[in-house]
Amino acid sequence: MDALFLVLGLVLLIAGGDFLLKGSVDLSQRLSIPKIVVGMTVVSFATSAPELIVSLQSAIQGFPDLALGNVVGSNLANLGLILGITLLIGALDIRRSFYFVDWPVMMLASLLSYFFILSDRMLTRTEGIIMVVVMFIFLIYLLRYQKPAVTEVPREFVNILPLYKTVFFLVVGGVALWGGSEILISGAVGLATHLNISERIIGISLVSVGTSIPELSASVMAMIRQEKAISVGNLIGSNIFNLLAVLGITAIIHPIHVIDEHLVSSDLLWMLGISFLVLPLVFIPKGQRLNWKDGLILLAVYATFLLTTFF
View 1 (cartoon, rainbow, N blue to C red):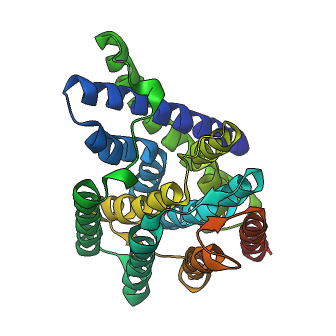
View 2: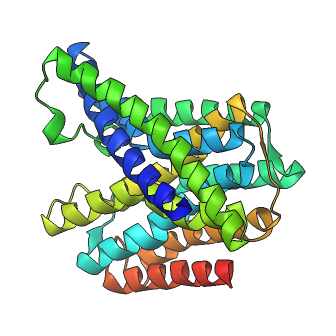
View 3: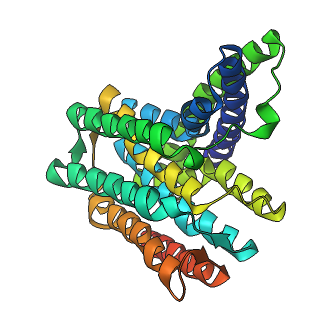
């Protein structure tokens, strides 16, 4: 039953996030909010809603390792699993913004999170506020100076829906996210207890990969359709948002206390390592492109992380 709850919770989270995205984008267009603002704010928040809801609910219900493990695991999955699989399908050219904006800000967010947690084994409300402020500064910078790097509104959401459909998507999406998070957390904690493993391991593996399924699906389908809009920058942007917004907002509402020391001594270091690894992979053997060989390296690193986590 716990495994069934885990799967059912993930299905509801994915469906809820998709519904919320459709409703939010349509509402933004009704209010005549510019596309560039919608792409950078509404779309980003909606696509990260599963991670945010799961982490927030986990922290409030007294499972902080599940909350933190979900974010750290999602970031590892984005670069190790999703980017790795995407590169096996086709090579990706690297945009100029990768060197000057995307990668440096991701490393800043990763180091900021790591040192905040390392200092006292917790994320306080003050630290959460700092992280959210840094996120807003980053958003303002993108909107003012890096408009080509901003995520566009998905094409399937360009046509305005009837008002009743917009309301339906918003309400059902919100309810599905809330219900899915409750069921998923119940299943994850129950499964961890039944298998006699920590909540951290469940959060950093099964839950984090599950909440990253929409990104995996979008990346793979984009490569199959030869749509080069997908880039390393999109996945790096997701990592930045997970760290600064998801962890930041969660810490503001409910400070996160680390229980399992492995989150600090191992998992966060793996996240820092794979985040840094992307830079040399771009330059070696030749710059401005990632190919299938880099994909194999990223998948091997992610597989090694999982093996060391479970064994």
